[in-house]
Amino acid sequence: QVQLVESGGGLVQAGGSLRLSCSASGRIVSVNAMNWYRQAPSKARDLVATITSGGVSTYAESVEGRFTISRDNAKNTVYLQMNSLKPEDTAVYYCNAKVVRVGVRRYYWGQGTQVTVSS
Image (tube, rainbow, N blue to C red; front, side):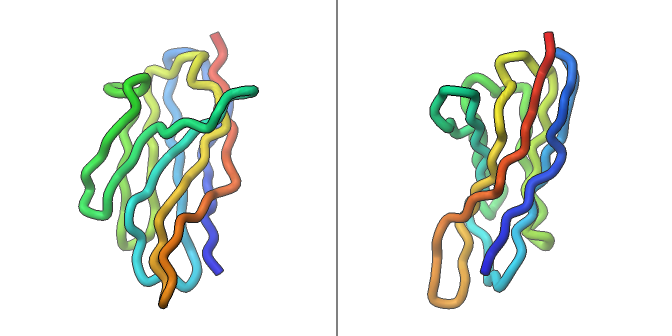
């Protein structure tokens, strides 16, 4: 069994910062790409940022220059540093990772963490 557990969400004023964390645990051989998605009320779940196992990152245009994704491969953990937050960043943020187990390779999701940015 594999679990992704997120932490770090909360309420912050516009212009503030938050740092999200997501750790993968279980019978894991390795973790490939790790991603952050977000879903605002009544909207689709959108990809925010991706980081490969080699550390190459990509971002949605809406967060480029404000958010930074990073990872600690030894801890199977991915981070999302969010700066200059805007009210439109308010959403539930989900961690997603491609996990390699013995004989299995599939994506897993975390439970989500709420980020609320007040104006």
